[in-house]
Image 1 (cartoon, rainbow, N blue to C red):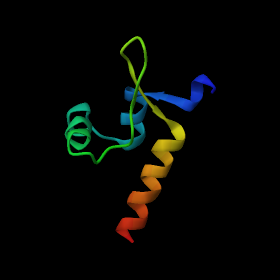
Image 2 (cartoon, one colour):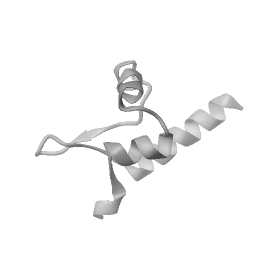
Image 3 (cartoon, rainbow, N blue to C red):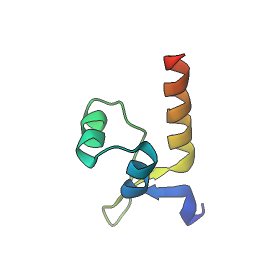
Length: 62
């Protein structure tokens, strides 16, 4: 897997245009894209998971 396939939380927040606190509220409710914890403790989101999550939101809104 290429490094660019995994997004940092700050990159995800830029894409979603939301605050860190808002994202963590969504995450605690199970409404955020799947996150992966790396061995160093950092969180990452796979680009494919974020895209699929956004597609699902768009479908539900229509």
